[in-house]
Length: 479
Ligand code: 5AD
Ligand code: SF4
Image 1 (cartoon, rainbow, N blue to C red):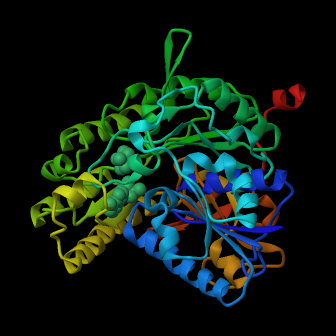
Image 2 (tube, rainbow, N blue to C red):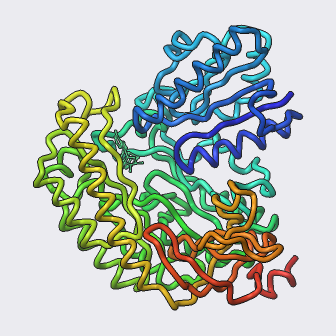
């Protein structure tokens, strides 16, 4: 049986799809990248904005039409939309055979098998109030993953927590992903060791608010900084990242860990959402603009060279021009490496959707979105240009999307490169994207690259060293 999985949304979904694939493969199913000839089509979905849901609805419409026209296919919806919309989704799209919420993925094989023989299968998580809050949660399927199949060469995501307890007023995540649960650090270490044995050298720890990570062990609380210390000791590992952070109550020990631990990369994704105190309050963010500014100052002071990324929502209910200007000003002050900017989208069931009118006209949202992006690009371009002439360590991801599209190597200027060089893309420790020409087999390796040019989105460079796996000698002695 051939299964096709399409992933929407965040890194957590990318990881969940990877885990689902491992489960299905171990049950003897084949994973295909051809949707048209698949026997089972699974959509792993996102509910964070209406736009994300609309994309899934139109995919479902097309699939269900094909099915009505005679195609034999099992259609499944996984992830946040399955949880948020529940049975309603099947009423809307009659061809759906299964719904599987984020916390029910371990049942996927059983659900597909049952769906082939009977009516639609529905596996949802219990509503939030009824969910068991326990740190010994057994639902983690992460240890069953195949460490040889990850989203990029030499890189893997590792979940350290599930859910969110912050309840920002605009956000659907606490309702669909359930209460915050941190994973046992021993399990995280175990999973990371297996990944290292399979050749992984960079891990990215995942959670909605990773700095809230907390696990009680032998009478002590293990926090994110402690976890980073334990991971930093693992031989064979080269880089550790973590996303995403929440600015409120941010423990400075995490910044010290970033400064002191050689494997922890100098990168923070720390969404402010807005620069205006009035809006932050209405968003239920529980920190002030001054708290946020102080955190950024501390990060730069403690860590030194650091890449900071942010998220902003424009057009939140009641956002005035003055509030919006505070966000513009925050981008200029923080000098983010990059920002993800979203137009407010009311999510049914959230406090903001209930309490506030979505009163910023679409045209104003659009204008503010463009203005914020423009300011961010100005900042990014100036800061990227300041890196010209520097040599940076890059973990190569593979062919750049442009080279892939044209199926040949292109130098940044657009001319063809010599024989077996292609345009490669990779990232620095600070998460800056670097493109340069090199042999394709550098994917998954570390190279030094001299920066020769820059745009707002990318650094362009020239390869200085041969690729290295960056495993120290003791790694080979121990294995
Ligand atoms: N409308 C617009 N953007 C949202 N985000 C979360 N909920 C909404 C919403 N209702 C954005 C936030 C968050 C990112 C993942 O998505 O900026 O950090
Ligand atoms: Fe949503 Fe806020 Fe939790 Fe982030 S911290 S997932 S924005 S509720």
